[in-house]
Image (tube, rainbow, N blue to C red; front, top):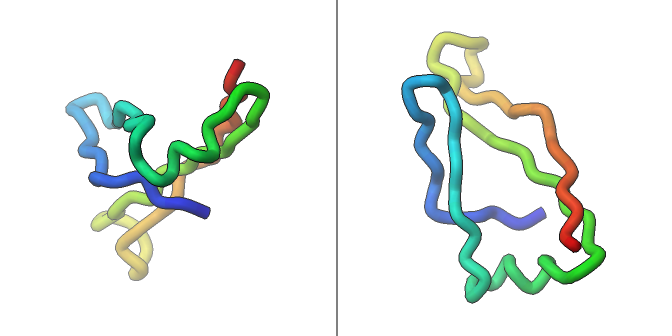
Length: 63
């Protein structure tokens, strides 16, 4: 598991986006034919006592 920094902020619709930096250390995993999984770890002040939650993951294949 690798973290992508800096943290992404959610917009008014609850969407987050973060451009990938292909010079960053995590980018070594992004090669043709790779299938990577991404998941958002976010603060959830209105949720359970843990104050964070995880999104569903998504698989992205790089062609």
